[in-house]
Amino acid sequence: MCGRENIDRFAKFRERMLEWDLKGRDITDPRVLKAVAEVPREEFVPPSYQSQAYTDGPLPIGLGQTISQPYIVALMTQELCLDRKCDVLEIGTGSGYQTAVLAKLAKKVYTIERFAELSESAQAVLGRLGIGNVEFFVGDGSCGWPQQRTFERIMITAAVPRIPQPLTEQLADGGIMVAPVGPEGVQTLMAYEKRAGEITERFICDVRFVRLLGEYGFEE
Image (cartoon, rainbow, N blue to C red; front, side, top):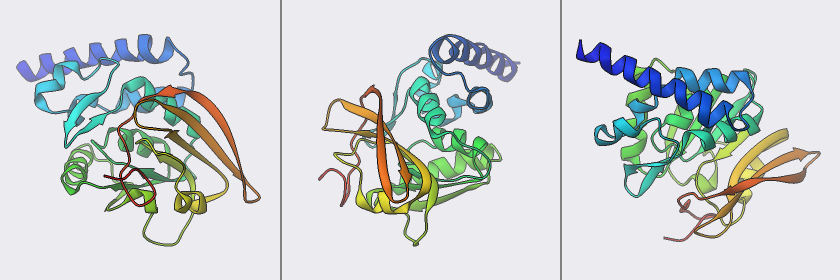
């Protein structure tokens, strides 16, 4: 009985989040809304924060990292313009929540996390949810995927002082990258598109993310 009540309680809050925090703002892509609706955010936060799983704000997940607010997850996903033909590189696995949303829309997600503990936890949650089109790697995400290849879409889920050169090189021609760029504190969320080797950029909004540490990110 308690389990059934918990499921119903989360479903109610999830629906409210979709209606007020996503549809009520500028999230209009029905595929993105469906993907977010299908991913149980409560599975990706520590038990002590599960009651806040559907508030529209970030929550701590340990090691100084956070799970992004639902609106920002949906917004960044919408800006990627994903389809089932896309391979996505995600920099910063974190809790795995954004990873799961991307996996609902893409052909495959390749995700890099600096902290092995977070990567392992995300793998466990996605495994329980039956999400299998994800490949995990532990390492410096600012250096890009360890094998030489390109991706149709790239998402950076931590702040970078500038776009890391290896990620520019791994963005396929015609590809889109979304990233929070700027100093520690407040950044600008930017969309980049690569055409014939040239990068164009577009401002989305101001955001606040934890820093991406690494060779092409922030120094520790």
